[in-house]
Length: 247
Image 1: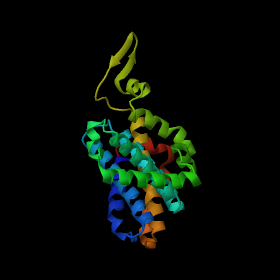
Image 2: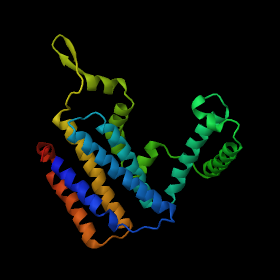
Image 3: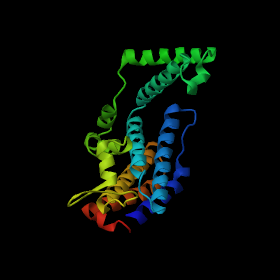
Image 4: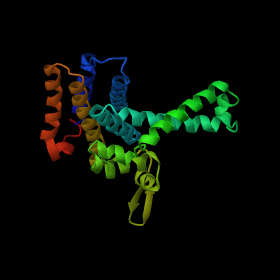
């Protein structure tokens, strides 16, 4: 499995130059950015694994999964970009709105800044125009639209717990039961099953993202066939995958 993800990552990077897109199109730029983010996060996970570490891989996986969901939805409908822009406006307003009050030393740029106030008015108007016509989708809405409702209720739930350092994640990460109590651990190696699940999730995300992108941007059939081979190879392994963790 580990050797496979290295090969998959390599062939993904090799075929990046085959993607032909219009830089003037915000939809195209956003799709490419989401794809590049997934590739970079996969690379970071590989580097962590090669360094003999594990903590942080699931945090990276959560970000990769969120980017993958946006990629699926945007590839399915150009209109999804409006929802992404609405979130952008909402977060900008949250940041700038706190800054113009002049109470946060880390946001001093916004205090008494006419340009910042002008931008705040712009983002407020843009967000209002969107929310008058539609609601900003929740994370659940996004996953459901991408056909990943089951993943949202299972894998993504666990990844959020890990990223937010919830009690469930902290206990699982740093304590092991024993007959008369608990042992505290640090830098512990995850179980084969947990590590296999993380690597396999990166693999599934990268495989599907590859096929979506090269189909969307109409790459040559030879490119799509090579990438499809990697997807079929993974699917053929099925439940035996975890036994091939180091392969």
